[in-house]
Image 1 (cartoon, helix red, strand yellow):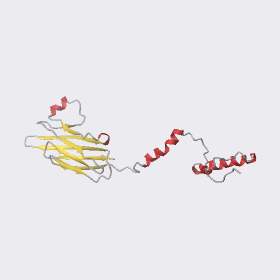
Image 2 (cartoon, one colour; image 1 turned 90 degrees about the horizontal axis):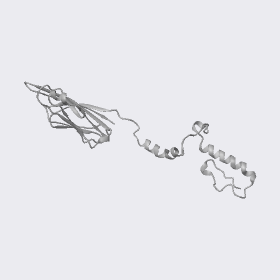
Image 3 (cartoon, rainbow, N blue to C red; image 1 turned 120 degrees about the vertical axis):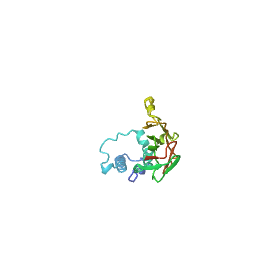
Length: 200
């Protein structure tokens, strides 16, 4: 007799029914197919697929790879980390303990130098992105105030608020790792205030 027993599709015997099986067993085979399929695909909440399945064969074939890719992603996002540091000229400050690999870092700088007859200030922003990790931006202040009127492209530059004299400031982001990065300050003044934001 060629009617197998079992519960799921994996229990099918491919060679059944055999050529010598009785025709009266046909109804047994049909009931077996129905029971195996509905047991293997019960549907959510036991609804036995009461609606149509519209996924294509390509989509179904790619489910495993897509699920594996999703499962490899972090289950939660870390909050951005920020800080505010005072740096002296030609100093490198190491930021550590982020708790995540940063994908983007922004540093805002306010630089000040004062003398008896003049006072210089520069301010601006530089950034680093994981999508462009071979390009660590160093941004320079515009010099005297008159330079502002001749500058048409302010991308990757500091804007200087100085009224007299010549200023140049450079802040760079480097050595970005799995838990931190370096801020480097150079070229001008006795010190700078630098605020940084790091994002996952």
